[in-house]
Length: 249
Image (cartoon, rainbow, N blue to C red; front, side, top):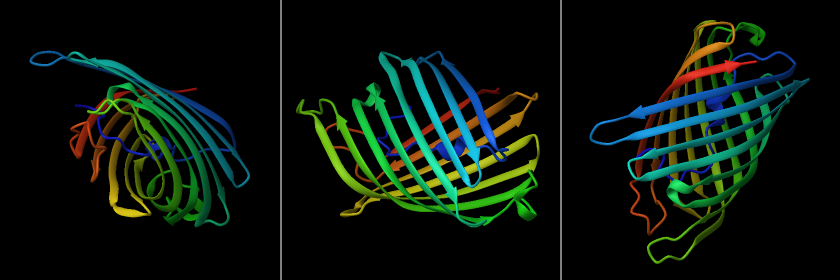
């Protein structure tokens, strides 16, 4: 099934734009999916994002909501993620973030995150980071507080969790030209008191600009949770493929 794994921290890296000028920017994404035959799947996803750049600071907020139905199961999930990044040099930045998430499909009543860390830029698109095309490579390392509540496991008791995780990521971006963006992001997150409780996430995306404001998008999400919550019979692996259109305004 799509989107079953309980994975902390959504991949907002996939929504970062390659080049942004100072000021306020916004974008609206919409994805629609339909499968019919031996099994039925209908889903619609909407995402609204705001970016604000001033000086060495970059703030953004992402609001995402997904509704759908897979056979007899209902899909109702969403999240709000806010992040602030301040650059100290061309290579090093400080990040802070906060997130709230829910997912009725997997009985996740709420997940709250707050944390921060450092972001390192290893490779730029071009001298002075002024060229829009080329390869970019970033890594991040940090800590986050995680609090979540899962409704009604096998014993009908709510499962509550409150812990500290290390969150680390690697981002690869390639722009062959100004119309095409390819990106892959991998996350590694583990409980600092129990390193065996770790999660891996790999997100890959392709965006092709069709007009000045419209782009075609394809996304692949692969997840692995080494210790999924007990009482739900969840698989450790999860894979999701979506495609749609992105509109910037």
